[in-house]
Image (tube, rainbow, N blue to C red; front, side, top):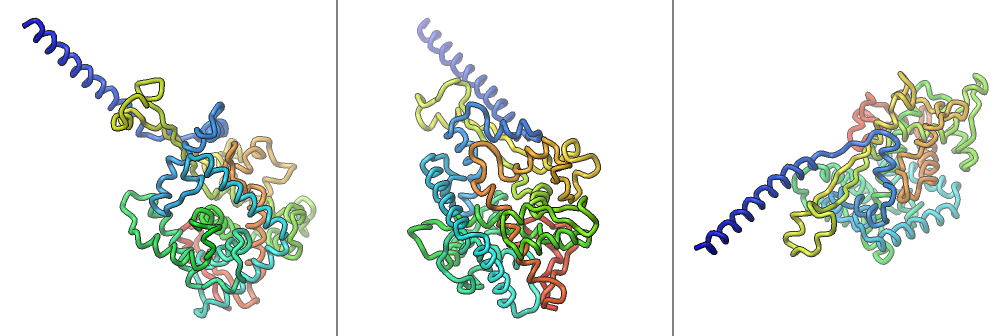
Length: 419
């Protein structure tokens, strides 16, 4: 009888302990459902590249929140994988592509840009085209040939393939942020058209692994830079872009332009692109997620696999890049939200602003490998568009209301129209 009572007491105690633990665990995990927002320079740097973090820690914290890109695009690159070997291979290939593009030179890149603009204009018989679709067309042709090394002439890339790839990447990106299932036929169609553009299966077994990082940001920076350069008060910027188009060198990109109003009105194309990316960073928010176990301060691998998943959760954080790059205490009270490339002139640039000028490319050990190359590339493409599409030259840009500037979708009212 005593043994029965002892057994009953033991099982009741265990059940009570399990219930108490379950309640505590439920409350604790619910507290982690919220995302901690980082909106100061130091907190963002500590989040993206925390002191003492191992390469595996950094890779897995990036891969977890990017899982939606696997669902939408079936990506397998370093942005969605914690595998250090995948990271090393991807970065090595990306650096090789950048070295090859640099070796060919900016004049070669500019010729591709001019050809891409001309092909995009000739291929549209309707005499009008959505501005965003036009820029997507131009930049995708350039990205495929000028950086990814597709062995084809600009005009040999199919118009339909280019159009479908650009529009479907944008659509799938938007759908990846929603909880609803994504129709599988969209990715299948995207891969079908992209493979026709990139037939080299050995070099690019999964072309989207490289096309998305290269192109998805480039086209938006180019479109936004053009939109600002078209404004009436940006005559100095248009002259600076014209000079860069005439002399496509890094020296010209960084050279201050002297306007008719005197040396105090100097403007470089580099400052213009930097300001474009400050106001409209390609990634407005950067997410990280760190897995850890509870209640054990050590790995729970001693538990059966089924139970391990119930003791592991993630701490989610988000760097609010846009807020930092528009913070009045950093960029000026009353002017932080204004488009003012001259804020990057050496005579005005503050130390904190200098530290943040490359934040759109990330920070820490795994910052974008194209940080030094991409701004010049965007500027050369924008200069080519501004040169070929202007009043009195056959085509012109009709500006929209402006609320969609810098976004992936919309650009309502923005058109490229044949004069």
